[in-house]
Image (cartoon, rainbow, N blue to C red; front, top):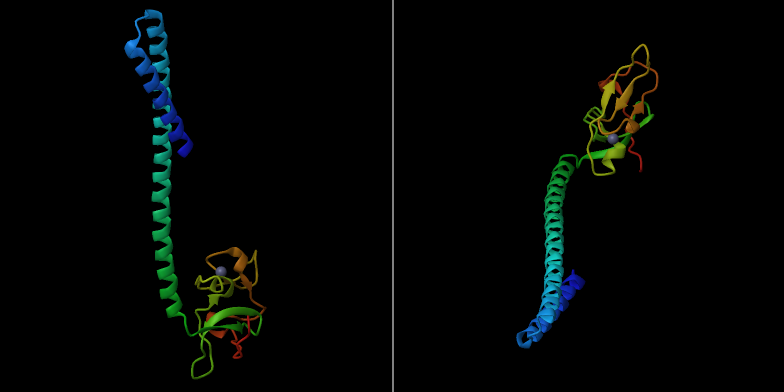
Length: 176
Ligand SMILES: [Zn+2]
């Protein structure tokens, strides 16, 4: 943008010099030539100003986008912090007879960890996705704990009669 401004200033200086020369000029041919040079310089300046205006518009758009992103990030951070507060007593544990790593609330007085369980992959990325139990179908037997955020986070449950309440919690917490 600075080089564009400098170009415009050079053109304006050139136009000023030509105009000063024109004041004393009587020769019609020279006047015509100088006038067309002047017009050329004015067109250059106009072009530069248009380019600057365009750059300014792009910068304004970028600024608006950055402001929007900043406010969205701030909102997201607030949400994450609020949710993190909600899940402070959650810890990384093995459930389903030690087959699946999830985040679960501390055990109750009967040493049972109740669902909902949270997806460990999401949890460690500061996202909180509640795993849901998906029953097997004839086509796809086998039960799963499904993460709403990504099919890649699906946890296959071992054979057995699992329900959300009898996922065989293992009391010991495991290190990440
Ligand atoms: Zn997940």
